[in-house]
Each structure stands twice: as structure tokens, then as C-alpha cells.
Image 1 (cartoon, rainbow, N blue to C red):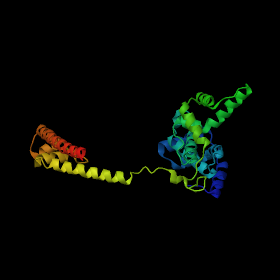
Image 2 (cartoon, one colour; image 1 turned 90 degrees about the vertical axis):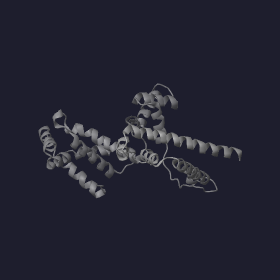
Image 3 (cartoon, rainbow, N blue to C red; image 1 turned 45 degrees about the vertical axis):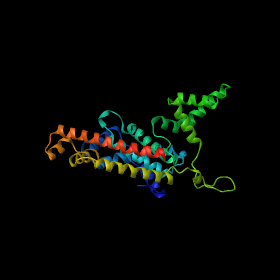
Image 4 (cartoon, rainbow, N blue to C red; image 1 turned 45 degrees about the horizontal axis):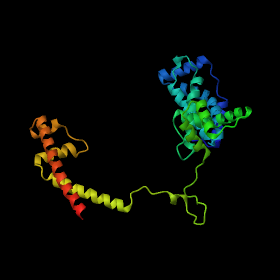
Length: 293
């Protein structure tokens, strides 16, 4: 459920006054939910840590995502943590929930950062949320030592610092340094063309479509002519074995025709040989006609 501003204030206010759970109570609630499906225990556990989810959501406001959306995604992560938490692992629920809340928020931020998918691998995610910070740190350290880092060297150092491939650094740097714009925006110049008009249409052109249709019709004609040279039994086997979405087995055809599985296989091979010879003959004649025209 999406939050509006009043809804966000209500959720935040309720989170601030929610109870603080001691380790024993937290453990009992987690076990009640995991072992007995106690929804009241789940509700109490989640409400107690919604404060944590909101605090983590606030850290991502600088990415331009509305705070209500961040809180909603933080809540989703908190629910996932509650569903998967094993109370017998000896880990506090808050420690476990942090990972799920962070993952949910980061996935949402990356999905909504750009119309173009920014990335989804662990290295791309690390770059998205840390590239600018690491770059600033490296430039600051280099400046303190009287060094000036060129762009290629800086990218190599960022890749080493974060333990990610250099190509991912180059890709993410290009994505974060640009911005989306409408394809209906006008280009600079007097003609006022939209950017959309400059994109090549990848659909088949009219001449290609006509040529393809003609070729398909010709091949179908050749195939029909070749099929006509087969006996009714051979035709049936080819149709059932080669021209169906779900080909029939040799056994099922054998039962229907009163033949052994091996005999059906032999008839299939015999029919395919006939078809191949006929098609080679027809196609060869057609090729000769084209060559002489």
C-alpha cells in the first residue's frame, strides 16, 4: 500500500512510540511466528522494528526518491526479514533485518533512478551507491600528496578499491554522469526535429517484407509438392513426427499403424530421404532459372 504524506506521518509517529523489545521477548515472538504462524506475534515484531526501517530509509533521501516510497520499501524489506528469520541461529532480529531492509531500499532506488536499467549485479550495486564517495576519497588523498589522477587511472583505482571489474566502473560512471531526457525533446537547430525522428526503425522495410513473403510462399509450394510424392503412410509419419508442436513417439505411431517401432523409424528415414531429394531437385531447378534470367 502506497503512503501519502499524512499516511507517512502516521506510520512514523506510530513507529516512534512502538515498544522496545528485549532479546527474550523478541525471541519468543519470532518463534511464535515461525513455529505456529502467530500473526499477532509477527505484527508486534514488525511494529517494534519499523523505527529501524524508517531510519534506514532516511539515509537514501539524497537519491531523489520520495520518502513515503522509501519507507514503504523499507517496510517490505522488514516483512521479508520477519518471514525468513530463524530465531534459533543466535542472531538478533534487528541485525538480520538490516540486510533485508537495505537490500529492498537499494533495489527500489536503482529501479527508479533511470528509465534505463542501471544494473542489478552485486558489483553494479556497490558502484551505484559508492562510486562517488570512493572517487572523492581517492581524489582527496591524491591531492594531499600533490598528485593529479587522470580519468583512466582514477577508474582503475576505484575498481581496485571496491573489488569490481573495470568495465563495470566505466559503465556506471557513464550512467551516473548523464541523465534521461524525452525522445520528444527537440534538437538544437532550425528544423526543430525531435530526437525520436533520428532513431532508425529496426522493423523490416517494405521490400524486405515482400521478399520474405514471396520466399516463404515459394518454399511452402516446394514442400507441398515434395510431400505429394510420399505415400499416405509416409506422409502421416512425417506430419506427426516433424510438423507438430509436440511430435509423436515412434511407439505411439507404431501402435496406430500396427507396425514395430523400428519399422516406423525406417519409414521415417525413407520418407525424409525422398523429401530431401525432391526438394534439392526443385530448388536446384529454380536456382538455374534465376541464374539464366
